[in-house]
Length: 178
Image (cartoon, rainbow, N blue to C red; front, side):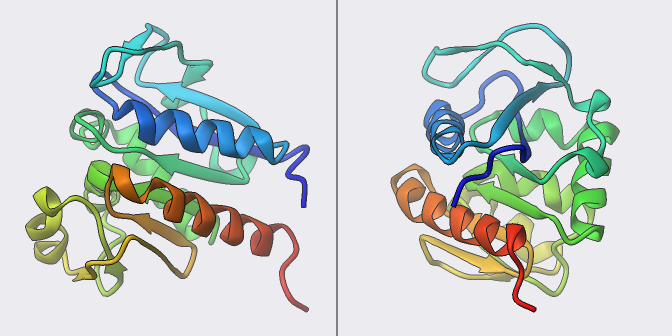
């Protein structure tokens, strides 16, 4: 299935985990999606491993109604993104609309701050396990899975499983069962 004409945003900030950004970015482009990189501002950011990422737009300029899906990679970036009302508001709006939100590793900090994890299964880096549990999520130690419209991935080594779950969720969202 092609995601041609589907706009998917990936949120970035300084210190994003390079692989958790670039691999889903490439995988979604491979499926034909229009992938938009959104930063807290328009300045280039550098991943944890030094790769430069140039945002196409800002998080504040995004509207949930214009997006098919959203991806929140990990690294150190989520700690910056979670302090942004635009980022947490966008995650909250995407979730309220039932749109797919992919979250991997430390990316889970953003939906915690958006207030959308209570009563749901979640995973991520062990470094945020307590944060997820304290926010009311049920911790699951699994590489990747779907919890409703949320797609969770644990760590960098689980990127292949995360991308499989993300694409499967997007296929279902693009052509829901009748």
